[in-house]
Amino acid sequence: MRNNRLYRDDLDSVAGYINGICSGEPLKRIIEDAPINPEDFRSPANGFDSTVAAVDGSNAMILESGSFSVVALRAVSVAFRGGERLFTKTTPLRLPRISKLHTHEEYLNLYKECFKKEPKNLIYDEPSRAASVFRDTLEYWTAKETVKELRRGDCLMLDGSLKTSHATHHPVISDIVEDCKETGIYLVSVSKRTSLTWNGFPLDITLNAVASEFRIKAPWYIEVPEEIIDQKQKDEWQNGRSYIIKLHPASEIVLRAEIPKNLTDEYTDKALSACAEYSGDGRIPGYPYPLMEAHRECCITQEITDIIRQDVIGRIDENGIDRTRYNQLFGDLHDEFARY
Image (cartoon, rainbow, N blue to C red):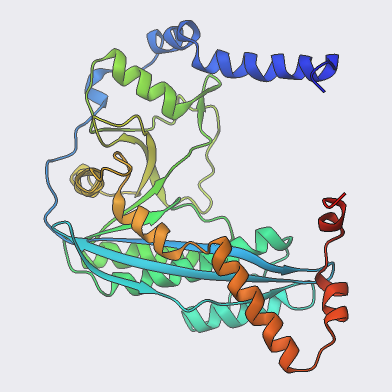
């Protein structure tokens, strides 16, 4: 493999691109030409005394055949105040079937169960994409229910973006935004990665380098100037303003946050001060630990996946279905290939 010229050429190309992103000189030229000043970076206010809640969801493939799949999904909300955990609430594990025959009905039932109305659009995506839409539905329902547990001045953190990726979720996230506005709850979404670039350089790395050049110490945040990013952001399904944030001086983690549109600078500062206040956990400093705890609680691990799969097999056995038929449906020849 390593003696193949095409393989080595591709290695050189990949390594050269990564070196270019990380190299000091091109990045320095971008910084020098940047329409950004030190005062564009802001430090969030110290402390956040109210409750901070976080929501996350998880999905995993349980069974997969050529004609249909079974996925597991669940969502979790956790809340903290003064560093103490107030509650952890977990939805039951759900097992929707995904196929051309079942997906529409399964999604219709879950959506109606969560939001008491039918979605205007249904799912036409392939299984892994459809599974994410199912998961997001449960996650948004959990967020709406969590808002009911919070009071004015509290903060709700969502994992990911305020931009929806499926038409049926746009009215739901809009409702969450409005519910938070009406009740005086600070809403912020946090993404571990961003696809945004600036002159081809990852935006988070570039703005972090700019902050270092200006000797700005974390925690800091900066609103993403629309004029510097390479991608043109569509307003459709876009519910927030984007920020690049660095929350802890002892961490190199740089995140993307979104705050609902058309709100005050004071609102933004309070929401991001909640993120900074809860980013000092020694396990992963620089990342809001309510979101980390929500992820840990909801994650459908391989162990859980195996348990669910065994439960399904147990029910099949109870119904007297021949195991041979099961293997015909869900057996994977790649497992057999791997034996040889």
